[in-house]
Image (cartoon, rainbow, N blue to C red; front, side, top):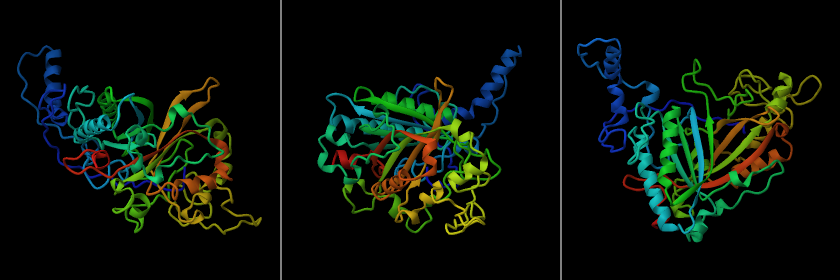
Length: 429
């Protein structure tokens, strides 16, 4: 959890397109086209239920809502799911290649996954064995992102192509990591503004894995739904804090340098890609919620109501780290989370945060198993995540209210060009 914010501009609504899918939801019928007939079908069923025998004229096609119509593009310079606005639902999953599977099987799997992602992100059914879970919905801002873990390169005989930036993260004193829910050969991130669309994608990806890979771990997350507030706002986490005010923005002059691997960088197949650090951070909410408001704000360094720094102003006001109170102490405490995570307090280290909250029920003593699926993107984790986390490890006031329970680092290659699949330049290079 760092003092940075994810871009909130709404994705553009693109025109609906008819598809030629052959999934079980109907050969040649787009799930978006099916919605256009929903109004007419509902009228016919309603009339039949009322015992009316005359035919009902087809109703005009009902357009998708703005939320359902939003579409992210699969093909592009970068993979989707990195700079797109936060989505309401998310699934993270890691897979390990099956025993005996290698480079050939991995390439076939990424080819299948890419074909499925392209269709689902366009609002079409899966290429085969579609479950019809999302047949009534539009694209709903669906994004599917793929990455490679450190172990992937051993399994595929591609050790010489493994990036130095993918070296395992160092140990941190705040870590209580469950190895079974950490790392993995392959990583998949799914996000959408509709829960059924997101689950549909997760199920399709899992089925596509077939005998080539087995699921290692899977986590579910959520954010506030688009349109739930009167105007766009920085997201809140489960502690009730505005979380992410100082995220780098695509409009920043140095955004690409901080987030993406440049063309001409090493290794070449990572051009326009990024590195994702994934951490499951449990929030000790029972302890946190016992704190008075003033104490919560001093731990974070910002007002809970609007995210403004304790030094004054609004959420976007520059924090005054030198301002003192009547007693001579800093208004923003020296161990406040927002102070420690500022890039200018970490040699300029910055990362693009794009998290989801999670809730996995309650423990035996009734404490909520809930927190943050922390995902951050950077051109080099050794210059992004690692220095910030090391500093947090040494004295962050928030550390006694959170626990890092799972971790992973993944190389996420650049986007696939039309006719390519994700990772093709690595697997066929």
